[in-house]
Image (cartoon, rainbow, N blue to C red; front, side, top):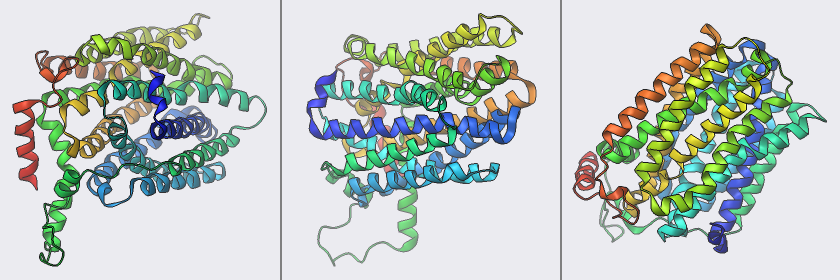
Length: 449
């Protein structure tokens, strides 16, 4: 799996992703403790709202980025987003009002909505061979797990000697390090087909075409911004991916929003155990990601992803049992085990997702497709984050577990029914595109332009 790091460009990009996510992980712990300082036992509600605002930024901004990213140098786009995120992180220690948390979270995540789809779309061009790209996806999953494993461990060490607001300095350092690493390599530009498609196929001779009217340009920009979403909705495999994203979001929202409430209020444990619980989630995800490259060489994406959804659905009853229990020393190790299982199931679903998109969508539409995956998957989190926070605050943790478990079960069952096992794109080494299904979707996208 580590052989792909011999590629200098990818090595620097992977390092950029890793250090940025380490900083983000520190911010996740610090933000939960900040919310608890401001709102006390209602921290889950505040954090749920803050994370819903984060998802609004992702859902609203990522499609627009997918539509215009070809017009900007990729390296400039990525570095600018990192610098913006660092500036916001440096502002967070001075927050003492709930509305300030909400504003800064929106700005921070708007910058992330610029960075992430552009970053994801460039990796298949840096590593065009599918075997290399599959291993890069597993490494990327491991980098995400640093947010849930190494970062909480680091946060626990920092919290042992100083206050949580210092964690935001580590967040800023992560984003600045990411910007420096991106600046150190040359990135491939947008493909000619992508540029031609985005510009509407304008003539090659300057001055011979007066250009479209402002209204036509607006319609084309809107069509380009929504093309990836329409492609997702027109392709069965990608519709199933959207439903699986909802399953992952249901489990992840319970962990992200309510861990601080479980640890501090439900179990009465010290602040440092918040980081340990989040670390268990990351450990499960990392263990699955390490195993997946060999598994994906032999098993279909559909098989791996649906089994991951089954794991997520099966953990909810166990989480409900430990939530309903009023006492018992077994609850703390049970929480760690449940969180680790949630992490493993999520990794089984999310790690092959990039492979599925790469096989289903041709190169000239990958930026649109990755932007759509980013936006639509976070629309799922936009539903589950406030559900986890508001239901937990209003009706208790048991009700939140039941509601999120129902969402996970229904979405996983619908994905299994929708995703036909005979689809050629699903097979290891199968065709990259989906034939008739894709071309029908393509006609629908083109018609929107």
